[in-house]
Length: 396
Ligand code: FE
Image: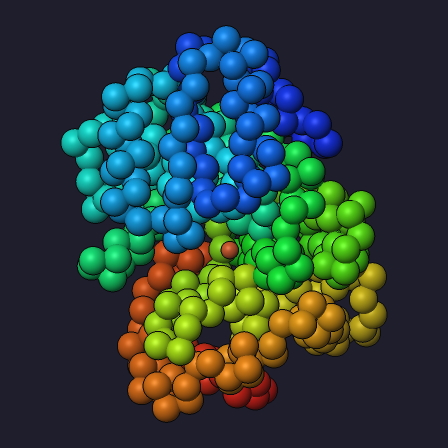
């Protein structure tokens, strides 16, 4: 038996933000990040629409990128004080992820992150509030997923939360919000979405319900992302839908080792963060090559290649064409091809090699490894990460 869960309602298209006027309840708390939603006037509009719907409204502002345990606890405290029956989270992945965790601690003040961390083991939510998510970036798709990532900076650990209880009730996918994204964010988040769709399609948990979402998302992203990056707002608008389709697929089919590697390399080195989407973009071609040694996975990569119109006279040739296409996209989006070249070489080679065994071990242990189509051990992960550092061929 398998379960397939999506938000009860998804409103999309320009102006869909106004749907907030139709929510029913007494008190709504808005959870938001830094200044951009305020700066572009979206926060005011959200507040105004909710007031028009008769809500008493409170704001929880200032959720940081990679939200912390402290922020989650503060938000949950604010919720316990205000007793909202709707939580409305707006912004990039971070405020929405944070609000999901606040929701759990609002309804269950005595729970712990350790308890919530066990996948698909949440207590029943919605005894106090429902949840509406409004994304402003086109990548994480947290507005439709069962996931949230919270960082404990003191312990230096990330808590990946996964449960269909935190799949939002309402998602509002209004492309006007995505039009505010800067160029680089458009590229990185877009390749994150591409990775979601490809990993979901080859995941060991893929199914008839996730396949069409994943395939069509890949096709749209392949056709639209570069134009969106270069400022074509029609393409930008449709990318907002494409990333959401990818989210619907991976929320239910889960991911693979591209994400395991991105999670564990992201903050591992002193030279700077390797941004999530860029990490995925660099690792994806290498992982496709590695996974394609599994015949079932190779057949699926070939399916993708055929579906997006690539040519090849065998599954292997089609898989290679897909790899070449991903590399071409990275080039057009000005994303480095390997860690060594990332951001002009901020990751030090010596430090990388020193930390490699530990990072490889952590990556193998990541929650996303379980649904990857080919098994991997820490020593092989080391080899694979080395290929991602130097941009060398994967031949194992
Ligand atoms: Fe991702």
